[in-house]
Length: 266
Ligand code: DGL
Image (cartoon, rainbow, N blue to C red; front, side, top):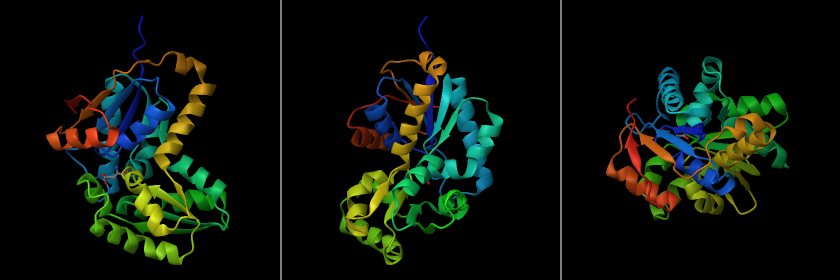
């Protein structure tokens, strides 16, 4: 019998496709089941109660469609709802914050870490809390960067306006002399080059999406019984709560391939 168990990934919208891209690079054999809540995005400006409610619904949807593992691609949902989801559901749930924190702690030399993310992620204080729990001597500097998500979705990656906005968001972090920067939002890896340019060539960038996929890889290597049961094929399924042509186009641009997007009956 063919395996039907899938790796479910969810995000507030299509930002999680940067995590899918990392899955294609690092764990290409597994079938992915993606849900993006485009009808209700952005999560980054919402209250934690609403983010938790939406994240529970997203997880229920993925489980109904055959997910046996869930990856919360969205930084905002990871920051706000991962504890709740882990309590509520019994399947393995991966969030992007812990692996990013571990990586940043490992690579910082001067013990000064910067974070950029949505307002909800920054306000949650979760990155700072986890870093301080592990290494109280590390100084953390956080900066919300809410304008970047719409600019990235508009494809304004190399425009002067975008470069200027990045510069002004990063200025306080530069002044704080961080040596490591966590790009704590699904979208930011698309601006990696420009962020690197503005923060400085020597600063190390951490992509939580990449780190969570590496964590998942480690987990699958250790948990053979779960790994064996996962579907291995390229029939990835992409569901959005509002599949407009705009998202088709962005998905094609970001993944470099056309994907079939279906309406999620959430
Ligand atoms: N996916 C969200 C995140 O990673 C960004 C977009 C949103 O605010 O919904 O935080």
